[in-house]
Structure formats: structure tokens, C-alpha cells
Image (tube, rainbow, N blue to C red; front, side, top):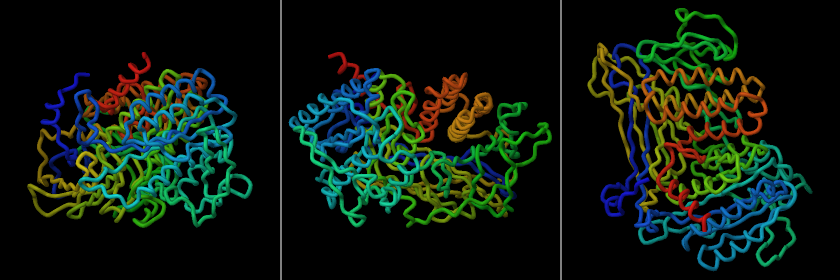
Length: 632
């Protein structure tokens, strides 16, 4: 990839974060109720680079990383542990004295460095010695390793509490957990429900009956590894001294969560799609049907229970999505109004958190790990899940992750959306957890961080009321963005209005905005992948393939069929379908790849080694850097 000179980049690159709003059409009739699909886009600034193509040290935030490494016996197969060790040595080399690194090792027991080490010459030598002496052990106490890593981050944050991020002070840090495993949790907490609950509940003692775990606060007492000193684990104090960070972690959610849904496993329905004249509902995915004309979009069947914000229309129950029904295309009726959504949590609810204190990146090696758990953990921590099917991909995956962390451009992003002039927000898709301040009128989205060159495209459906007369500039939405800009070390606030025209007659050449359409495709396709995976997990491989083929036909005939996002979606659905040819192939990697791909598109962040439009310049550079490192 050609790199511009440092001087040219500095002249061209804006240090401010971008905010823009787009609607699917510019015009809507004024004398009738209308629906408008809207995309609110957040564009990260591009980090400035030095002469070697690295992110400028003065422009990036210090990293606080804890590598949580599975050293169970199975890690000895296929040279997995050896590749992890080489990768960790590369990570150590890439960090500078402004960064800190800690290590947690877990098998049946959990050991750690106790604190994060400054990556100066002394700290690098200390961690390098530890990594080089790493050997495999016994079972897999994943929960113990994760909680120890989070507690180490929390201890450091307590030490740093009260620091100033203003001019002349050290910038806000990027704190992350890198959790690695090749198997299922079989010691400590072993169920996904308990592990997730431990991260999201303040009263964690309920999950640790006496004698079952070594620390009632949920943290395995660290034992010093360096110098081969092994201190005996000690009982921590009771709930009064429990870690606040773990209790404040955002509730782990499926990335397809919609508004107030609180289930970690429940999926939301695919986003409805409408043309300019009417809404139509597609028959269930298992039934063959005639596809619509190229510019006519239809609503995909909901994979699970439909959830919407209540509207003024009468609420009715949708028919079961997989129920067979015979219906000719000309008999299609407008979809029934959806049922009311559960009451969303209030702004002060402990169910959700505005800011995730440490991002969690998970790495699953081979086909024997719990992909659902690793994806849920990464969603809870605003990170991503990497599926690594061969040992050779371990370094490249870590290089991708490290490149992203080093190029973090903004943190603590909060997006507030307000519907104006009597409009109502009926659907919202932001990829991560959401909370509503005033259901249907305003919604606040905590979006975590954003890395250099990334976009966050949040999709909304607005119900527009009828108005008595035409209007050339009619405001339907106001967006307000607040974040900490890492590059400028300043709190940044941006606002934007979205205006449309309310007219008597629609223009004959009215056509949908391809950019809005491609993000509707992105949301719907990710949800279809998730539901197809559910069918495959139940043994219905044919039904899963058919669902993917249907969705591919829809996006190929859409207004954005030539856009980058849509073409990558089409390619990725082919990758998932290739693993649906047999139950064995699905179980030995296909289901992991499906989770990986679905999350990538919902989170809009690269999480594998394939070429992707979500990969930024720094991620690509770190992959190239490791190639040189491994040839030493």
C-alpha cells in the first residue's frame, strides 16, 4: 500500500471527528405519513504518521494491555503456544516506554505479573523472560484468567484516578484485555451465563459459593511468577471491596440487540426494507418465491420475535417467521404492526454503562472453543472476536488488533439522536448496546472508541407525520456527538441537523441514496447470517443456505449493489455458505467463522486476516511489520 509522505499527510489530514446525517430520499409527500431511513455517520480522523509510517508518538494514547494467555495442555498441539509466544515477543517489540503490559497465565490455576510493567528496556526484558519460559499446563480456567486481567487494569486505573487529560498532561490511555484460548472453559466458572453474569452484576458473591472459588470478589488472587516466586492465594475481603470496574461493565449483548432487549442470546429481526410506494413482506425464508425487480426492496423475515418501539398504530403479533404459508406475489399484504418493545432501561440503570473501562479482544484458536462466549465477551468489552483456524494466522490476527489499538482516534463516544417536528424513532440499529432516554423521541448511544479511518454508521427508521403544506427545509432529526479526541487531547462536541423536503408530488426521478441503502444491507445481512447460523446449529443446513441465498439476491438487486460494503457482504455470505455443505464442516470451523463475520459487519471493525474495507492503514502496516519480524 502506497503511503503519502509525512508532510503531505499532515497538510491533508483533519484532526477533528466528522458527523454527518443522510436520508434514503430527499423528498417525502407532505399530506401523508411517511417513513424515512436515516444513517448518522461518525468518521474518525486519520492519525498522523511519522517518516516510517508509524502513528506519531505525540498523537497516540499510551496503551495499557493485559495479555490473558491460555496455557492448558491442548495449547501444545499444532505449535499454538509457540506461535503465541512469538506473537507476544512481537507485541513487546512494538510497544514503547509510554505503554504498559501485564500478563496473566491460566490453566487450572491463574498466575500473573501482579501489575502492568512499563515497556522500557527493563520492563521488556522482564516480560520477555516470562514469555520465553512459558510452558503448557492442565485445564482451562478461562473465567479466572479474565477476571484477574480485568482486576489488574482496575488497580492501575485506581492509581491513575484524578489525572488530567488537558494540555501538557499525558493523554487518556487505551486499556485493553487480550484474551486467548483454544478450548472450552472447564474449571472455575464454566457456563457462559455465569461468566457473563459475573461481568455484569455487582453482587458477584452469588456466583462463588464457599469453597468453589478462591476469591469471593470474583478475582483469582494473583501469584507472582517473576523470579519463580509462588505465593499462596489469599481470601479477598467481601463485597465491600469488590471491583467497581467489573460491576460497571456494560451488559454483554448480542450485537444484533435492539433497544431495550436484555437477553444476551436473543436476536432482533432483520431490518425492514421499503420502496417508495409501499412496504411488502417476504414469505418465510424456507419458501421459494419470485424475486422483486432490481429497485424494489422487500422486508426479510424476522429471525426471532419482532421488537419495535411502540407507535400510535394498533400493536399486533407477527406470524411465526418459519411458519409455512402459500402466498402469491400479488397477494402480499403490508406487514402487520409490530408488538410493543420491552420498556428500555433508564439512563441511571445499572443494566447498561456509558463507558466500558477496558476493551476486551478475544482470540479463539482452532475449532474447539466457545465462539458464542468469546463473541459475547468482546461485545461486552467493545472489542471484537478473532477466529483463528490455523496457528499461522495467530500473529497476523494480533497484528491487526495491535494496529487498531495503536491508532485509536477517539474514546468515550456518545451519540444523542432526537427526532424533530413530531417525527418518531421506530427502529434503531447501532451494532452495540443502546439505551433510550425518551423512547421513540430521543435515544442516546454509547459507542465506545473509534480507530483511525473507521466509520460508525448508525441506522434509524423515522416515522414522519403528515403536515398541512409543503416545506423546502423540514428538520426531521438532530444528532449530537461528544467524545474525547485522542489526537487533540480535547473533549469534542459536534452537532448536525437532517433536513428533507415535504412536497405535494414526488419527482419522477426520485431514487434511494446508495450510502443509506448499503448500511441497511449491512444490518440486515448480519442479522440473516446470525439467524442462518441458528438454523445450522439446529441441524437445518439446507434452510441456512437458502436463507443466505435469498439475502444475497436481495442485496444484489439493491440500489447499493456496487458499493464496497454490499460487495463485501455478498462475498462473506459465500464464505459462510461454503461451510454449510456438511455438519462436520459446520461444527469444525463454520459456526466460528459465521460469528466472526456477523460481528465484523455489525461492529464495522476488521477481525480476521482477510482483506476487508474495515482494515485501516495501521492494521495493514502491523501485519507487514510482523512478516519482517518473523524473518529475523
